[in-house]
Image (cartoon, rainbow, N blue to C red; front, side):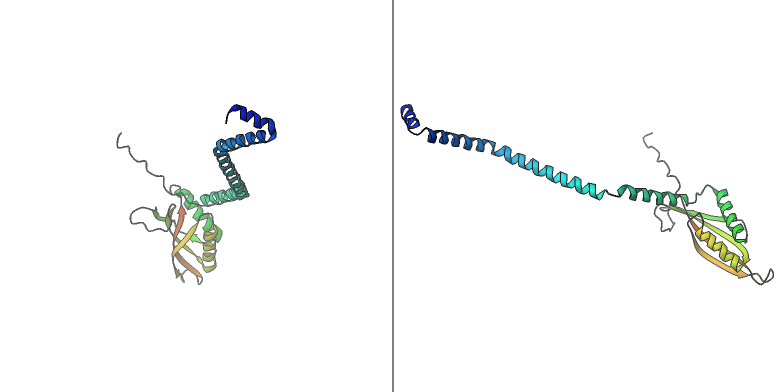
Length: 200
């Protein structure tokens, strides 16, 4: 088909020729733009997914700051109730304050040992906190001894009674008893030893 025939067709049906030309152009555009439309849809879907995830995270974060603050308070309170091994004078003052509060007579507290998790031969249930073992010798009537035990269990330090032996003291009075206690107190772990630099 030559140019003259095309011109003749155009003169007879100009609208049909124009529509056919536009259709060809639209098909070509659709063909060449098809890949970019798929990419655009993919990016759109990714953006929607990220927006949903961000919205979900925002909803999950409601009250998170308050929870973290509460946890930090619990940690601070627990740390404030841990005994420090090197503060022996504080230990003695603490035990003496319990004795005065319960009106018992107490011999000098004896520190038996410090139990550090991970140390060979040490069997403790704690994984990070150390334990300090003390032996206390008390004398008083039964109610006073019970008062001491109550003050010990509700006092500043987190304490557990491992063993208790009680014996009557009839020569000192009908209600007087001597009590020997073996107790363990949660303590801060000792500082980690710095590893020597082998290259140094």
